[in-house]
Image 1 (spheres, one colour):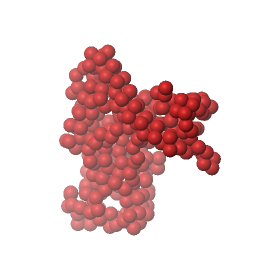
Image 2 (tube, rainbow, N blue to C red):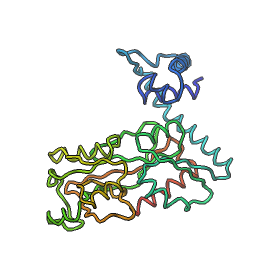
Image 3 (cartoon, rainbow, N blue to C red):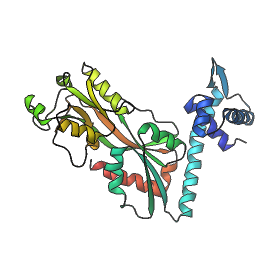
Image 4 (cartoon, rainbow, N blue to C red):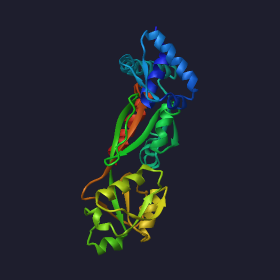
Length: 299
């Protein structure tokens, strides 16, 4: 008989690609993962992995088992979720990881709108929210992907769309006036190739997005400032330090006096939630996702 936790190991190996990465993700040792996979092969009665170069790849039997594991693990997660909800009389605690602008613009407004659900929030950029979700540290990870910078969704996760967030060009009002741009008028990115640029810090995907958007427009931005917070960037724009690309959801509540413009060649980021397969069937998680979708409609 196949053991569920060994199926989960094979499933994670198919995602992470190596024994070492799988062990790190699941907080196990490499030898422990290898031993459990060897036991699963004995249970299956067929080789599931084969060496290719220095790595391992799934055999036909391994790929078949992983495809069934998607369904099996999803059903197990759903059963666990249903039991947890029953034990809590239909209520529970939902743990959320969200990047800063989603935490402010989506999570905060719905915090008190759901009865009988206790919320817990930790701020994570998408790059760290996904590992937290996979390690079962959170139940929902709110992440984003840009049209110019897509992000892969693991096979063991479900995706729930929340909002489409356009990226705007933020200009000092004096610069907008010099260029003859009225507030809200579309702007050509190439027209600002010679202006100083204000960008997010290098370790954020938003930084790479700006490099790609400017590259597609035919220039490399002259970066004069980097910051970890878009409110700092908009304040610098207002102070005349340069120009910036800012997702609409990331604009601070009290927007500094800047001139905002959609791009003539639109760039947007999709804001969405990820849950492990089956977890969204929990009544409390489903209630939170519904509330997040409602907030997304207002953005």
